[in-house]
Image 1 (tube, helix red, strand yellow):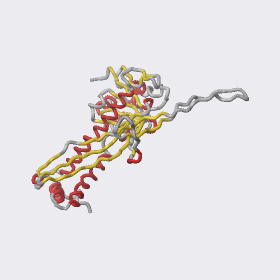
Image 2: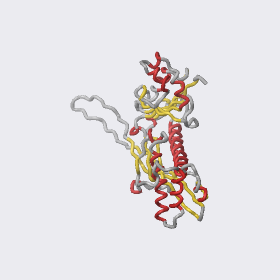
Image 3: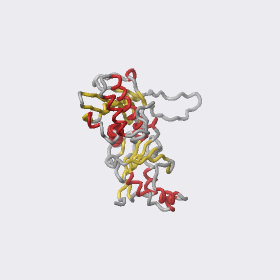
Image 4: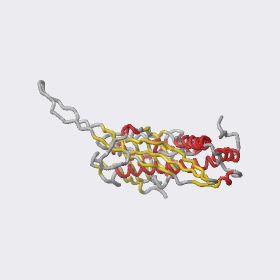
Length: 317
């Protein structure tokens, strides 16, 4: 039976945690650490948008590739070659030779870690907040925010800049659209990816919670059916719209109020790898307790044709 039942008070849970951490038995300390660690892993699956857009895959030490110019852990992934197309030839003719080239791209790993949280053990004796939940939520939210930051930084980098043609696909993948956040404007944004030489369609759309406030202004003529009434009554919820999955985030510092990111299906996008998943470190030195979380992950965008961004200029303020 778990020591952290939802039926007991935060103060009681803190005392159980304190008893384990203050024990001289290292097995008990590790048990307390696992209690924090298990809670953390649960939250990782529920928060952040990077893992929803590009689901992570586990990587072992045996999967890593050595590199001459770096000691950073790295894994190489292969890209499918471009198709040269087909041609008609007369009877008796043979096709021209074409050397097949397989591209590769690296995923470099980095360690993410939270600040070290410290507490005097005596402060847990009468504490009325759930220390486990506080530490776990703070740690996980910070780490997932860093994953989200890294993903969008990579996406912005491969798209080069606003209204700039990407050489690999022959079109701009970061486009400014005039007229504000309208149904017509959103549909123009959805044309960005299929216009490229790669011809992918967006599967997932990412916007922030301010953006959807403008979507909620759409009238029955724009939305159609009873959805306008449903949105007015119940507000916006993450739902399929225009055949895509829409994700919303409160991280306005990452996703602007009038910005819309679009992503192809994960297998046409890139790789997100986990070498070491979120782990909570717990230690005790005399009467001082310390906690921090860390992980080792890596991600890369392997196909610029699988991402797009629209900035809606002239949107309402």
